[in-house]
Structures are given as C-alpha cells and as structure tokens.
Amino acid sequence: IGKASKPRFSSSFPARHIETGLGWNDLVLSAEAMQQVQELQSWLQHKKTLMKGLKMDKKLKRGYRVLFYGPPGTGKTLTATLLGKHTNRDVYRIDLSMVVSKYIGETEKNLEALFNRAEAKDWILFFDEADALFGKRTGVRDAHDKYANQEVSYLLQRVEDFDGPVILASNMKSNIDEAFIRRFNAIIRFTQPTPDEREKIWRNSFPEKMEFGNNDDVPSLVKQYDLSGGSIVNIVQYACLKTLEKGNTEIFIEDVVAGIKREMHKEGKPF
Image 1 (tube, one colour):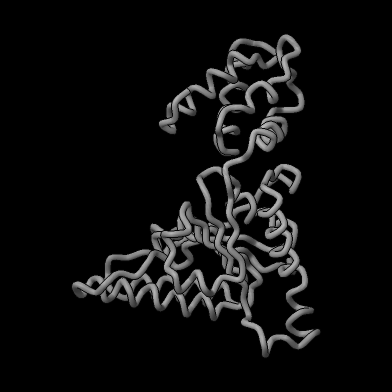
Image 2 (image 1 turned 180 degrees about the horizontal axis):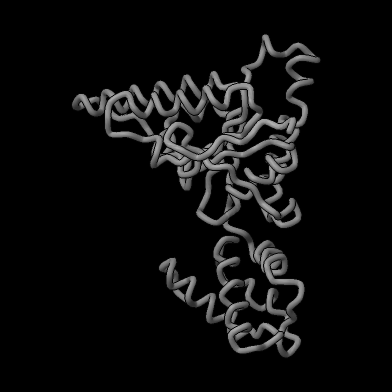
C-alpha cells in the first residue's frame, strides 16, 4: 500500500504507539514550558535542513535528548503525542516492564534491539517514568551495583548515539543520573497549573454539548482547588457520568464538587 507497517508491541519490540485526538489548544502549560516545547518542535521540523542543508551534521550530535519532569497529570505524555502529531512522526512509549530484566546483560540487549529498530525511522521514543532506567548510579558495594552502573553507562552512550528524538519523563529531576542531565538538549519543567491555568483546563475538558445547571460558571468556581490536568479530566468524567445517570442535560456544581472531593482524597490531599 506504499506505507511501512507499524511494528507490533511484543517482547522483541517493547514499545506502544501512542497518539491523541487533542490539539495544542488543549495543552495548558506555563509560558516558559510552552516556549521550550516550541523549540523542540522547531528542531523536529527543521532537523534535516539543519543537518544536511547547513551541513551541521559534522558539528552537532545527531539526536535530540529532552527531559520532561514534574508531578503526574501535568501534560508530559500529552506533549509528547502532540509533538508527534504536528510533525508527522510516530511516538512510541517504551514499556519498561518488558525492557528491564534482573538477568545481567538482558536489559542492554532489549534496549539495543529497540534502538536498532528505531534507527533512521524518524520516530519519537518516549520513556515514561524513566527513573527505572536512567536513575542515579550508586557506590559499588557488590556485583549487582557494578552491573547496574554498567547498565546506566550503556544507556548514556546509546541514547547519545541515537539519531532521533528521545524524551525522558520523570516526576523528579533529582532522580535522573547527573551524567544524563549534562547531555540533555533541553530540560522542561511541568508545573502544577495556576488557578487561571486550571480554569482554562476545566473549560477545555467539559463537553461542548452540556451546559451548567443554574447558569453557574463552574470552571471559575472550582479553579481554586489545587489539581493537575489529569485529575481535572477524571473529575469531569465523574460529573458527566453522574449527570447521565440522573437523566439530566445539565452539569450541576454539586456533582463536580463531589468529584473533586473524591479525587483529592485519592491523592491524599485535604479537601
């Protein structure tokens, strides 16, 4: 059909193709983070011209290494999928449970097979919860520590040699080995949204077909609650289901607040 088929998720290719139906307008980030994301998008769009047209391939390293760090639900995965969507690249999220092995040398073997498959494909490789692979090296106390450190050293070299973009996502920047930190082209911090940013996320998340009961401006009323974008989407789903259960066509603030209470208790936050 004139198109290369996408690799299937398996033990020999432990990565899943991820995509999104959302657009850049649905992503709410701080101005600084958004600017850095746009710089990454610019590299993805102009990579070939930069390397071949301007003949910078002899001076610059082939790939692009980025760290996304911040609390869960702040848009790290969505950003990766949007970058792929808007630069016509496939994004593959690496399944670390199938990569990391307790047997010496197996983790490197699994990753080598993955990188070899992805070479020259123009894919974006997305390592979610990257701490499991790219964590800090430790002092050598036994053979296990020695091989764990060798594993990190191998990863450091292999990621640097890869010709495409590699995105690592972590909740904490401090969990990543310092040798990786020095080699990143960009480090983007994803922060908890501010009240105004939360209001925008609330407005983007509610379905357009539903209105609010009593003409309440629900997004404005609930923006005070300290929630991530991922949590807000969960609450909107809860409120919509409650509305449908009751046979209503309007979303009432009582259901939204009940969803907020539920989500905050789940996260261990005081309501």
